[in-house]
Image (cartoon, rainbow, N blue to C red):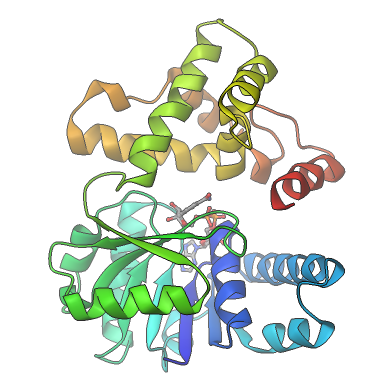
Length: 296
Ligand SMILES: NC(=O)c1ccc[n+]([C@@H]2O[C@H](COP(=O)([O-])OP(=O)(O)OC[C@H]3O[C@@H](n4cnc5c(N)ncnc54)[C@H](O)[C@@H]3O)[C@@H](O)[C@H]2O)c1
């Protein structure tokens, strides 16, 4: 496997492209937005600079990694020679189904189609293609170049062969793949999101303030980041969408998103990416400080 196409150059897509390119793969990074592609490439370049400064890689490694990435705004052109496509577009079911139909038509018939979705059913995504055996979840964690886990989600029809190929490939990226089955939220978010939602509910009920809630969880539970800061970091829109998928999927009120989360997303307060969430990231220095603290 040499050519990997990545759909979406946002928070996750640029990290996934960076990781494959640094491991020697040729990456076609695809986004409908030129501006996102530019921002994504700038982020990759800055993250590589940080690795050079820490002497984890050389300037030559940085140049090689960047030269392995080509950008596209047209999906069909970007996936033409791909052995694997990793989709990391916006978390929206209709959008993902549309993209996978298009990928199924545009890709060679032996191309494996993976989604980085946080919560949408891999089985449902696979069902709109003519190759459900070759559709799989490859759930990277944020920030992708740093985090070791890849949650590998087997859809109802995903074959053993494709699962094994993707497990091995993830190891080649220096990651630790972990196989799970396809139920709402998979494992990572089924456990994480109710905790983040409960932290928001605790704030909503006036039990404590933002910093107090995060301090309790950081110092009391040894979490590297408080739950409200983590929700900001993930993106409040993403958190809301994952909770809704679990709420609908299990028909269980315990996954109902807190009204405060719903309001904040409607008001455009999405966390780090919009400049404000539970914390204020409006000065670029502040956002950078948060990112650096986590990327240490
Ligand atoms: N943010 C996280 O911490 C996190 C963690 C794990 C998984 N995920 C999942 O990764 C995926 C991407 O999330 P993100 O946080 O990177 O989102 P994001 O909003 O940062 O980026 C999404 C990108 O997709 C692009 N896009 C939208 N429609 C497209 C299309 N038709 N073709 C190509 N590109 C398109 C957008 O222009 C944008 O650049 C989602 O499925 C999300 O659930 C997110």
